[in-house]
Image (cartoon, rainbow, N blue to C red; front, side, top):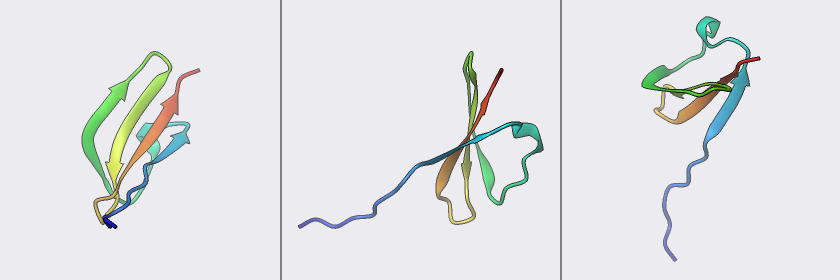
Length: 56
């Protein structure tokens, strides 16, 4: 049996990315789409998660 680190990816829908105060840091990746924007973040332990803002 092979054991390794398991990871989960968290994506949260928010209403306004510009005014969000979350612990962690912006990874530098931002993905703009017609429907909205996705920004990649990392928590203080360097686990990545995504924030999604839908336009509309």
